[in-house]
Image (tube, rainbow, N blue to C red):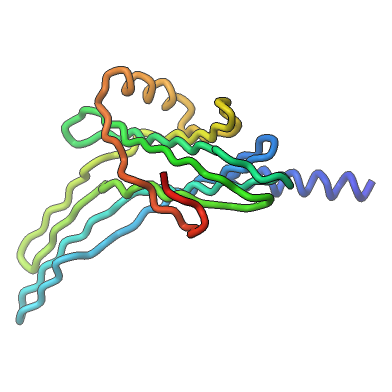
Length: 183
């Protein structure tokens, strides 16, 4: 009975983290929002600075098997809506090779979401883009083995956007590990 209880607790703990486990691949997607302050100027009673907010994702892929895996394709798409109202698709892909029980992460290129300018006498603040949703897929051998889609209806919106052709290809991703080569 105790063994069953611990297994249920372990399943709850594994399910409570934002991690998708499918077969031998584990996927975890972490939203990474940041703020950068630029152009600081202080002169007597006058001061001025610019603040920029960004959005990026860190995609962690883990090989949960005891066998090395090659040609693990990580595909991501982030759908954003700029101020002008036209939705834009930012997407990218990266191929990984993972040894047994090895983990690697891919960081998407930051997307500017807000900019603010403030001085001693005036200020302005505007949203550059708003995130509609994101989709991450792990493809092994031509089959999707793990994915994260938030919110659930964004997959259809991304497919429509791909058909329309309003997309912005993401620059090369930044890999956290030095072992994996960037394609």
